[in-house]
Image 1 (cartoon, rainbow, N blue to C red):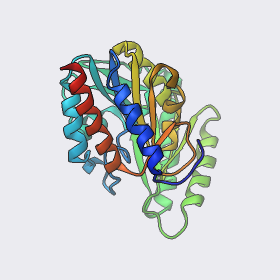
Image 2: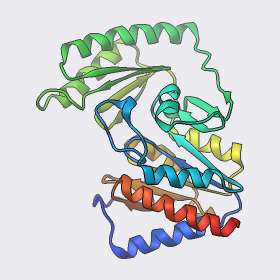
Image 3: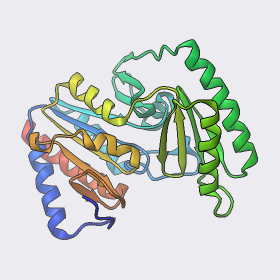
Image 4: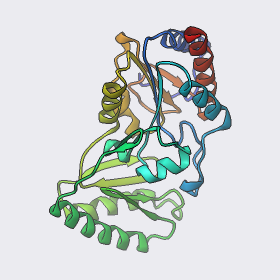
Length: 270
């Protein structure tokens, strides 16, 4: 689907509502969601982001239902994701685009090699110099890499920041994983993506169907591994090309969708 219209016509809305009702009747349901721009509006201070109250209420309700799992799949480091989602010890979390995984109380060790650690240190020094040269940019430290934020960069210098960041990172290593996001360019010494995270979650929960929603280009990896023929539902939030079958306008629409799903799932499992 390549329509870039951020809202959808009534027939598409009806089709999505029908898909959600069918999804609610699956035997084992996994609800996997991106966080920023999907559940929570973007904010200038990332640690201050929180899911909309309506979405949080629906997710809390879903988590309490039988054979139903809620998971957060984000580019944020796991520690940051734990904070903004206000996750408890039993939460299912995929951080750093699939590199970090926390299934309940069990985590996954990164086990970086000496070479990876050395590359990571040199990459951090190089990108910090870049950020120091561009007012309004910010360097985010991630477990296996760094993100250069340019949301508040002066004027129209965003493309220049991206170009310079690419060049700087390439001078450190030609084996980095690079991701373009919304007002951020990320470089990692180890590759993984949200599709890997979705597949790990599916295996762990033994889900018979999955809902995944996301707004960013990095969420397309997750959307591409879905299986619509088996009842999976993929939802793109906002504009842009997508592999998702359905699209909604914004975070409030996702909150409405989750409320509908929680109500239908509660009726089915009662």
